[in-house]
Length: 329
Image 1 (cartoon, rainbow, N blue to C red):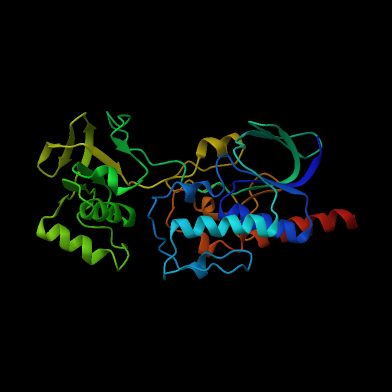
Image 2 (cartoon, rainbow, N blue to C red):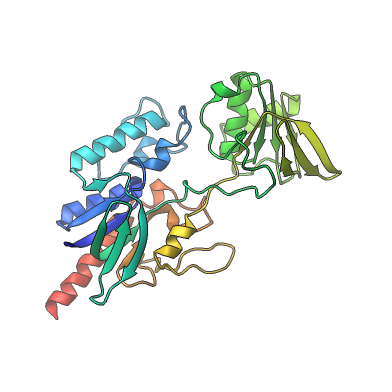
């Protein structure tokens, strides 16, 4: 096998950003992505609008032009396609990484669904959107339960329960209500809507709840999902509501199964942030780095594209610095 300078695991915005940095410095690299280009963004709701501005989503000093203040999913997909073509990035799509180990020559042997690679260095930029936080209740595997919101049209005339109270949950509750759902309810674990809900969403959802258009069950959790109903538990005990769909907008988490297969060290605590140097982004495995939102572990609201755009340059500079030291020796 040809020895690469670098393998980047993950073809999202961060993986592409790291590839741009590698491309500019002449490193021999490849990006391995298990799905489509920017797979997570592709699986966002069809009509989704980002909370960030287009300027804050730009990578590679390439302007991101959108028609509104907040770019849409469709505009972002077009933008990253232009990034791929403009920089001629070496990206292998629909190629899932299965395992990785350190060989005797201190290189990383990476096995995928389509082949094998040897690399001097590795960047893990796998994000977190592919792995939903489950409810862990009976009936969660029924087809009516969804952890990814798609489009409001299919819920017209249906009784919808939205689980959660952060931005996505509030957005979904409002859109399904406005687009014709027969009944929209929310199961909210806390006593109020999440305090950090965006300022342009909060008044709307609070007013719809206040007027009774959207029924909010506070201090309430889901106990069981059944074919035509849901069992909830609130301050006064268990109760049942009729239901056609459960939209579990409970957030996402890193793919810890993959991270463990890669050999990354993950503390057994609440945050579960993979061990890495916050300055260099190098993990406990030599020459293996982490980039993007995966660096925050379970604290998924801490990092986003806009505040991790320097990760590619930071890591590539570390790789070049180490190479220079080896050459000097």
